[in-house]
Image (cartoon, rainbow, N blue to C red):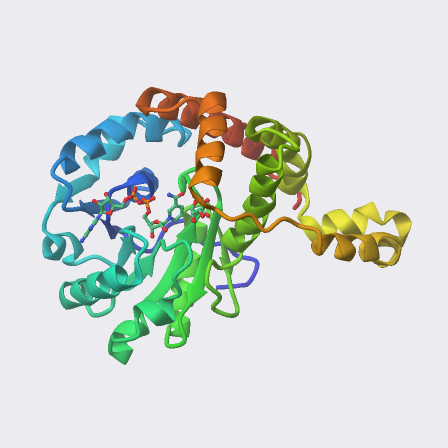
Length: 320
Ligand SMILES: NC(=O)C1=CN([C@@H]2O[C@H](COP(=O)(O)OP(=O)(O)OC[C@H]3O[C@@H](n4cnc5c(N)ncnc54)[C@H](O)[C@@H]3O)[C@@H](O)[C@H]2O)C=CC1
Ligand SMILES: O=C(O)[C@@H](O)C(=O)[C@H](O)[C@@H](O)CO
């Protein structure tokens, strides 16, 4: 496929979603919205109800989608072997525990087709660790495809190959998510937390530190972010931002002029202890600002997604 040419139609037509929680349900909706047959499996006793109840809100955040239409391509089963039988891709969304994912992928490999791609949505566990005890032919098909929540709205998916992931698997996986309209970014090295979550962890560390020190409240910190870096980083990334912040002299001037001050500040950044008191403070302030419970969750997710979709629509096809 020519470098400039982007795949428009997903090459895989039947996908298994293993784990139907926050992320698995979002993936199921996105896959179905692209005409893909989706098999969802999870041991949760309310699986069928959870899938049916989640679809209206998910459909509302996928332009042109309808809950009943999405459900028409989704089949649920509590049987893992049945779910992965005959699929071309398995998207795993189980608990974020290494031993759990190692056991689950060993079970998936026993039942999925020998050529199926095995992708984990993991937030930070590397594929080489998940595949550590798996044979080469399975490890060759296993990689990380880490989405940002919610996957049906946020474009990024970090493709993080393991040491034994096959090149053809990596390339076909990149093509698949591109055809879904996502923005796959392939990492060149495995690092726990990958890139986006390491950045997010750095931001949350300083954010929590500033709130615990009483510099701002949680809601005020969110306002600072939304009124500055949030919008900025939707238009230019950190390096381009500094390049433009340097004026005509660009990043060269920025580094010469403000680089030393920035580096000195690194030594002053917070390193908060996330103990019970800290968690209580953050929880109290966040729930006071945004509510808690299923109704508040639904309302805030709908508002978040509506704003994110508006941003994506406004950016549209502006040359990136
Ligand atoms: N929540 C988030 O913001 C994001 C989470 N992720 C990653 O996605 C994965 C799933 O996270 P969430 O959806 O948030 O978790 P969740 O707790 O909402 O869902 C996990 C699901 O796994 C199911 N499960 C447990 N044992 C299972 C088994 N043996 N087979 C199949 N399903 C099983 C549970 O019943 C539950 O429905 C994790 O690896 C997480 O790190 C990735 C990006 C964002
Ligand atoms: O924030 C997200 O959507 C993702 O980066 C995640 O993986 C999860 O939120 C979690 O890792 C937050 O640390």
